[in-house]
Image (cartoon, rainbow, N blue to C red; front, side, top):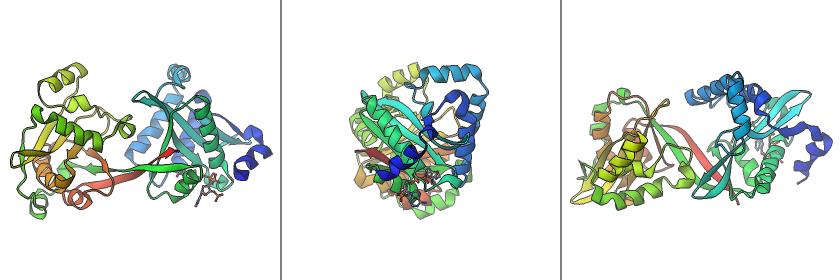
Length: 328
Ligand SMILES: CC(C)(COP(=O)(O)OP(=O)(O)OC[C@H]1O[C@@H](n2cnc3c(N)ncnc32)[C@H](O)[C@@H]1OP(=O)(O)O)[C@@H](O)C(=O)NCCC(=O)NCCS
C-alpha cells in the first residue's frame, strides 16, 4: 500500500484523467517507445490511427462524448511530470452477456521513470474508477514473456483466467509438400459441415471461443452455423465464410471456418472434439490451405500450448501469446 500512495502524496497533481482531446499524440509517442520491442504491423497501425485521430477535431468530439460507453481506449489515466506525459493507462468499457466490464490496456511508463510506482498508481486508480461505476469485471491481458507487468498485476490481485496464442500463416509461403509428409491425419476425412451437427459444433466453438475472450473480435457464433439458418444470418449481416468439417467414420470431429476481415488479416476459427484435435488439424488444414492458397495472411486465435507441434508443422507461427487476467 505504501508504494501506491507514496508518489501521490508527494505530488498529487501528477496523476490525472486522460484527455482524448490533448493527450493522444503524447500517448502514441509513449506507446511507441514502451512497446518498441513488440510492436508489429498491427501495433504500428494502431499507433498511426491514434496520431491521425489526434488531427481530426470531429473524431475527438465524438470520442469525448462516447468515452465511458464505447469499447475504445478513450478514457483512462496519465502520469505527468513537469508537463511531460511519462505514464499512461487506458480503460476500455465493454459488455458481454449483460455484464459491465473494463479492459485495462496500454499500460506504459517511460523507461526513465520506471520502478517508482507509477504503473502501480495508474492501475490502482483504474480499479477505483471501475469500482465506482459498479463494474462486474475488470480484465487485462499481458504478453506471456512480460514478467515485469505480470508481477505488477499479480500484486494487485489479478489472476490468470486464460492463455491464448495468435497463430499466423501466410498461405502463399506454405510448403505444401512438407504439410503432406509430416503429419498423419489418422483416418480423418474432410467433408461438408452439416446443419444437423450444429449443436456439437457450437459446443466446441463455445468452449474454444468463450464470450469473455472474444467480445472484441469479429467472432459471431450464429455466422458459423452451417445451412439455411446460418445462411440467413450471414445474408443480413453481410458476413461471408468458408467451412470444412472433419469426420472419422460417421462422426464429425471438427470444424474449421475461414472468415475474411475488412482489416489487415482474415480469421480462422477452429473447433474440435478435444480427443480428436490433432487428427482434425492434420486433416483439415492441408485441404483448407490448398483452397485458400491465394488468400492473404490469416490469424488463428487458439488456446495456448495446444496442438503446437501440429500447427508449426503446417507452417503456422505464433505471433503472440497473451495471458488474460481478471481482478478477483
Ligand atoms: C510494466 C511497466 C508498465 C511497469 O511500470 P513501472 O512504473 O516501472 O512499475 P512500478 O514501479 O509501478 O512497479 C510495480 C511493480 O511491478 C513489478 N515490476 C515493475 N517493473 C519490473 C521489472 N523490471 N522487473 C520485475 N518486476 C517489475 C514489481 O512487482 C513492482 O513492484 P516493486 O517495485 O514494489 O517491486 C513498465 O515497465 C513498462 O512500461 N513496460 C513496457 C510496456 C509494458 O510492458 N506494459 C505492460 C503491458 S501489459
